[in-house]
Length: 299
Image (cartoon, helix red, strand yellow):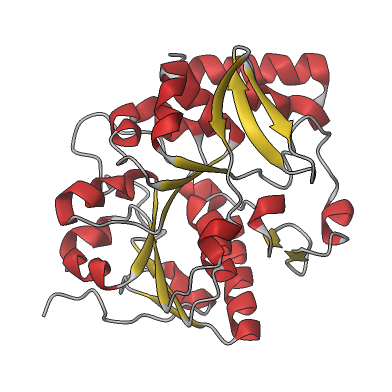
């Protein structure tokens, strides 16, 4: 399997040859292709010319009635909390929080992985996702899994999470183009996009939690909560990491955009009457309308 360093070098070279607006095409190179159905939706993925998986619409998930959804990150605050209580609510696990399935017997509503780097650094966690789990993968993540073995995709219910500013086989759209789409809401400065239809793409702001929030809000719950989204753990290991090998963190550099994205998600929740909560007493998201709640505190 390729390394993150090799992918960075390859992406830079690819972007130089193809141009910046098509640099994201490298996400699926080499070997991953997609096919649309009669409605125009991406419906199947192929790797090295061989069928890899069907891509099911997220409508199959969002039509299910839910009361509360918790989006779970990987912040160190989770180490101090009563995580068994997560079993009381529907949960979307992101990246390293996959470890909670085994540790606390959590059966998630869905799993969301945005960054191929997580697959490259923690392939064992990805491959340990139980059969039948509903997984939302970006094109780059799908390719990274296929490089391990595309047969794994057949174990899960896979939905495509196409990033709005990284469209498959299309040039990168401008902020104006995105703002004019009826299912896209933008921050005041136009930098961050929020999708109300995840089948048509998801916005990205530097954290997978923002992508998962768009899915959670589309499910129309009464309450959306954030767990392990501390945004302060620049030098501390994540929930799935020990004192040894750690994947690099770009959190500090991305923090302004992340807070802008979380704030936009909170605005969408307010407009829909959805209560927002966060369960980390030291999280910065409390500053952007996700107030602290003691739901996961140890009594």
